[in-house]
Length: 271
Length: 255
Image (cartoon, helix red, strand yellow):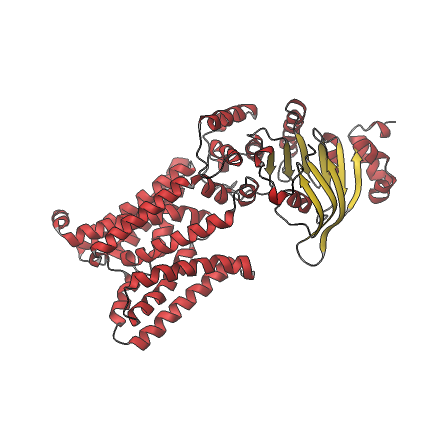
């Protein structure tokens, strides 16, 4: 532990903490809406798609995030438009977009040959390698998510609780669904640096699921989920430094432990 | 202004019309029950009135405006058949749910103010759920949950209350309580109420007007007229009609 605290002096650890905590806050907030709307796998689908987008960026020698961000936002839009316009089932739309992303990633990795190692870094994340720019971007995105959720809280709550009644109150649910999808795409792409494409959906799902175990009010869950996410990222980085283990995997397992603890606490409260 | 006017309405989800040739008028202060068998178009009629489904032909006016152009949603309270969030796992307190009804009075950003808080607290008291205000809606009984959802629909004191099978999942005692509350709102608050239900007998006991649908209007009028109607006698059989009307003390069927 002492060693881990001493490592806080290093800039790469500070950057990792800033990026990780802000991504976790964004994911925690958005995850509540996705889990309650039964769209938890949206994060998984977008992450897989982003894998392909990163592959494309590496092949074209572009900054991975610069290409993955807009392409993933388009993929998120496609996931929502396929059911609305083409009558596809929502989970099928996620599956289709996800498969296209992975196939693209594998194909481009094969064509690119020389960047396989880089691409696999995105598969499992490397938070200790984030740059100052990525850390600042994470903070900016988290601020945008917090601002959006604060301003649009009534609409987002109404649409999540009862979409038909929200429509009768003059709210247009499709607008808010798309906004949430676009924001989810952004946090997922940034989350790839924290835990990798294989595990990023856990940053959306676990904190929300754990907060829901402690549920009483909607506001309470929205406050708790980002806190749980941030705690697991800080703990994951600390574990990684102490045990010399991968930070992404440690973060996800810590998230899972916090979920189990919340579940047990709820059971005990009920007795 | 007339709350609802429907003229020669045809509505469909696919090729086959769910409703055709429907004309109907709801005047202020009336309490209508819209009844009919499953798939008769009851909920479809409500959806077209609310602008959730565009008519294939004919006209629907809500307070004199086409639903697509209607903006005064605070005048309309709506309680759908199912609210996705009214489940055991949704993290929302009764107070938060009732406050959702206030959104119809605002535009983005729909931030809550003191007036909203007062309206919510008054409604919680009016619906006898003030003591449940901080409990998650998923922890309530079926009857309490429906009461909270009705409070959400009524929090703006709407001129028109539209209820889509609100009592389908309730036991008889909760159903009686729910209807008593509706009658009170109609009598004391003067709300115009449209209640969609598949239970003709129950509807006749509480509403003063009935619309019987079977993809078109089969009957429209007072409950007394319903009891006299030969079309209804032919549809239900005289015995069943007698049971419905006798049960509910219709003067026409008294011995």
